Image (tube, rainbow, N blue to C red):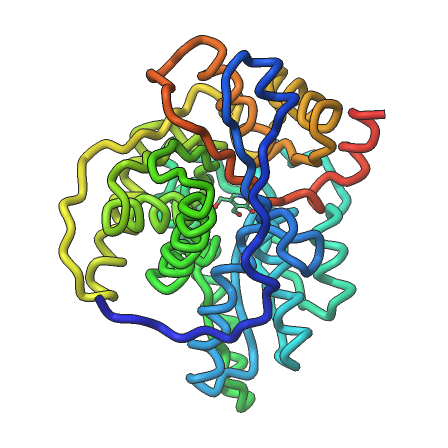
Length: 345
Ligand SMILES: Cc1ncc(COP(=O)(O)O)c(C=O)c1O
C-alpha cells in the first residue's frame, strides 16, 4: 500500500476512555469514547486530521492560497481558515446557505471565526432541486454546479493575479483526506489493543462520507473484527452508500490497493431528522445526556445525531451488540457553543 506524508500539527493520539455513567444508563458495557473533540486547535474535531495530509499536498504544490467549500457554519471551512492562518496562506471559502437556514441573516460561529482568521467568504444560496448532489452529500446537484462555476471564476482570477490556489473539495473528501482516517483507525487500534480489546464496534457520523470511508477501509485492511457503524446526519441511506463507495474506490486507486467494496455499508439514516444541521428531538436529548452523564459537549449536526443513533440502537437492541463499543467523538462543538450552553444549563 502506498504511503503518504503529512505536516504534523496535532497532539496525537487523542485519548480514549470509558463512559461508565452511559454504560449504567444503558445496561451495556464497555462503551468507550475516542476524543477527537480534543484535537488541539479551535476546540478540536476530526476534520483537522484530514488537513494535516491536505496541507502537505498544498505545500508540495507550492500553493499560497487554500480554496474550499462547505455549508454555512462548516467545521471543515473553519479549520481550513485556521490552518491557512497558521501556515501563512490566503484562504477563500464558499459557504452554501442551506434552504433550512434561508431566513437566518447572520453568519454562524464557525463562519465568524473563519472571517476573524482572515478568510475571504463567498455566500451562495442553496438552489433546491430534487436531486442531492453526490459531491457534497448534502446539497442539491444544481447548487453543486453553481458553486463550482463561482469557485472556478475565483480560482482563475487568482491565477491571473499570480497566486497559486489549491482547491480542497467539500469536507476534504479526497483520497488523501480519507487516508488520514486510516491512520486514525490505526491509532485507536493500538490504544484498544493495549487494553486487550481487539474486536469492537465503532459509531461515527456520516456527512460527506470521508471519515466513514477511511475507518471502514482501515478496518478491512487491519482488523475485520472491528465493525464501523455510520449514522447519517443529512443524506438518505442510498446516497450515503453511494458517496462512501465512491470515496473507497478513489482511495483504492490512490493508495494502489485493491479491496472488495460492498454495495451497502452499515450506515443508518433514521436519525437525520429533517436533514443537515436541523436538530432532532433525539439529538437534543443525546446532547443533554452526554453532558449530564459524562461532561461531554456534542454538537447537534454531527456528534449529537451520532450519539443519539448509538443510544437508540443499543437501547432497542438494533444490531446484535455483544462487543465493546467505541463512540468516535468527531468534534464540531464550535458550531453551536451558545446553543449547547442554553440546552444544558
Ligand atoms: C464534527 C464533524 N464530525 C463528522 C463529520 C463527518 O465527516 P465526513 O464529512 O467525512 O463524513 C464532520 C464533517 O464536516 C464534522 O465536522
